[in-house]
Each structure stands twice: as structure tokens, then as C-alpha cells.
Image 1 (spheres, rainbow, N blue to C red):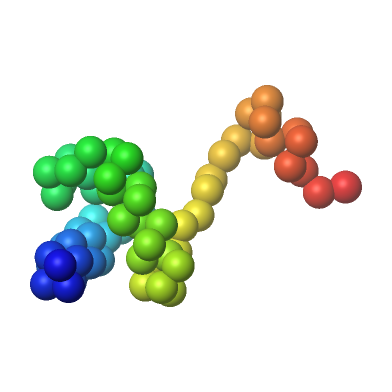
Image 2: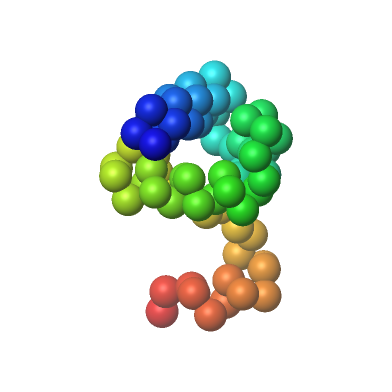
Length: 70
């Protein structure tokens, strides 16, 4: 299993290096895995400090108001 994980780890990071910021769905499409699988893999890589997950949203988005600092 370690070899399997190492291969996916490398493939995801190479994909991000080549294409820049991507959604989990885009990464999944490139690697042939589902969006959910890509999101799970990205979460594991983020917890290991190998990738950074960021969110960009419009300040007009309905959910943004609840998160806006006072």
C-alpha cells in the first residue's frame, strides 16, 4: 500500500505543479479518480503539509456574510 500511496502522492503534486490551482474534480479527471476520492487524497496531503487548500469566493455569496469578520 505504501507504494500505491507514494504514486498517488507524486501524481497529485506533479499535476498541481504542471497546472497550478485546481479543483478536486479537475484533479480527479486528470488522475482518473472521482472528485470525492481526489478531495480525500488532497485532505490527507494537506494534513501532511504537502499541499495547501484555499478557498476563493465572492463577497456577495450568501454564505460569505456569515464568515465575514466584524
